[in-house]
Image (tube, rainbow, N blue to C red; front, side, top):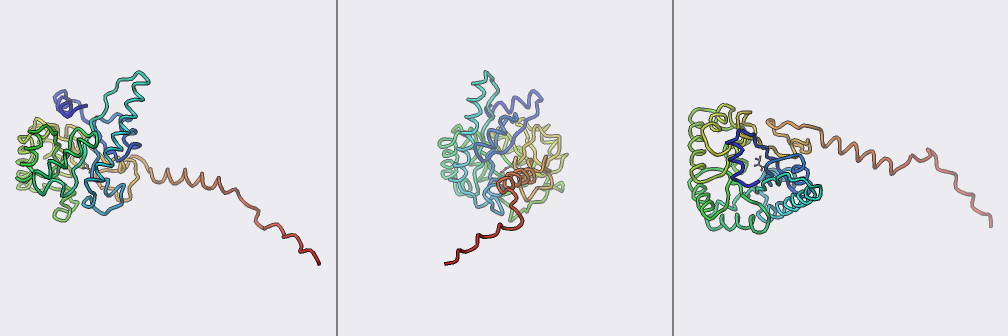
Length: 280
Ligand code: KIV
């Protein structure tokens, strides 16, 4: 899959499924499940690295996780070929982490370049649509770096916005609508809309040419994205708008507990008596 293919999916009315991955294992599973696109999201700072927010994850760490995810997709692709299958390899996109693209266009370009050169990502995702961010996106797109936008709940702004639903009143909705239009005009190939009212997301999906991929944005979007660790019930802090499909933690703990008990066969309740000490 290429970024432009997501637009074709929208034109053909085919819903897009995007899932996150953080290493070779998760990328393989997500590809095998049939995702159109794999996002190495900076949510891995929380789900995988144990941070309280997405802010601490570094560009080096994102590149590292994206490289591993790329290897997982390559392993999956080779397995498909061996089986004579020709399923499309999901599009790999990597989040640019906090402060890797907000400190000037040159630094932002270098950060995106690392993700495309050192890891096999075919695009980057950036949060927000402030004038500086739009200028950065414009430059990236002009030199051939595909960019996915992200509006609504933008976790890199958690200290300003919190994790609550965004664009709740008409003024904020109008502002978000204008930002979305600017992202499209700047050349983004798609837009992630997180935790915004269903009707707003539905209207934007109808009005924009680029695909709108929602999370906590209702069922009227062109596609959906989820944090895979949330869907699998592996995380301790589950967002309210992304319920788990299974109790992954519980299943894993039960299976491992069973294995551990099997390594410790029940011992007799009392120790056998020690042999009597020889009399000298
Ligand atoms: O970081 C991430 O996983 C994301 C998704 C929630 C879209 O941005």
